[in-house]
Picture 1: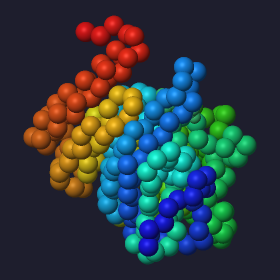
Picture 2 (picture 1 turned 180 degrees about the vertical axis):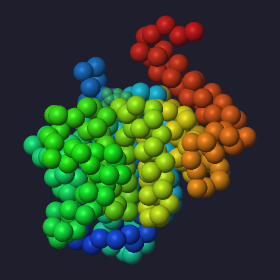
Picture 3 (picture 1 turned 120 degrees about the horizontal axis):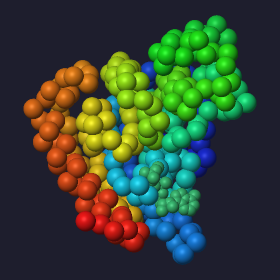
Picture 4 (picture 1 turned 30 degrees about the horizontal axis):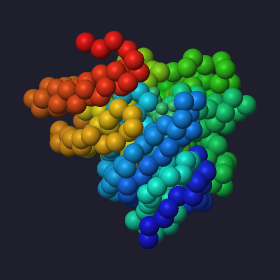
Length: 285
Ligand SMILES: Nc1ncnc2c1ncn2[C@@H]1O[C@H](COP(=O)(O)OP(=O)(O)OP(=O)(O)O)[C@@H](O)[C@H]1O
Ligand SMILES: [Mg+2]
């Protein structure tokens, strides 16, 4: 059964079930989204179609302002397409458990670190003992065990982002939507969390749609990289990344296909970044 996510679906999704039931499949069909801007309407996403298979890891790259966040928010049901439709379906025919890690701040400042991580579990009606155990495992995973009782304002930006990641993983989402989740992290922490995310994804079989500006990150994680054009955001290319799995930083970078894929994606992206700068009236070489 295909389930269209309702607009304003919960950010950390909620049905009472726990445990993996296979990844969700996503079908984005000719979707467009326009916003009213100060100088007239802005077409953020224009006629985008994208299928994500159950358990696939898709990474979206594109110049700033090309509509990546808007597309992700529409898949999450937090934004409504103006035209087209989006279907998200789960193999067990039940409502899809999804979680989104937002770009920038996405922790609740009024909850402690551990209460942030346990938030979705509490909504799911998970027992306190299980909440404690899962929260403690996830805080250890993201390297924040010592900060369980801290408040978000007492953490660095990168630490807060790790809390958001732990909170999203806590509900064992069938579809994990991540908007530049590692952008605020230092490189070593980013590498470690990329590898941990891969490990979790490989173990659960869940579906991930991940936005990044980093070609390296895209190549490390993705089954397929989707390159979006400068605004209005369209899909310019889809590039399969068939490096062996399981992957880690070293094996990915030593794959002879890495340099070739990097060059392909950068040349596609460079044209779009230059186009975006040109339309913004910047000087472009
Ligand atoms: N709520 C909104 N109201 C008005 N305009 C919006 C809104 N959300 C997005 N936009 C516009 O839509 C376009 C796409 O924005 P979006 O945030 O999706 O881009 P992005 O690709 O995620 O950019 P970045 O890489 O900088 O995060 C931009 O021109 C933006 O100004
Ligand atoms: Mg964005």
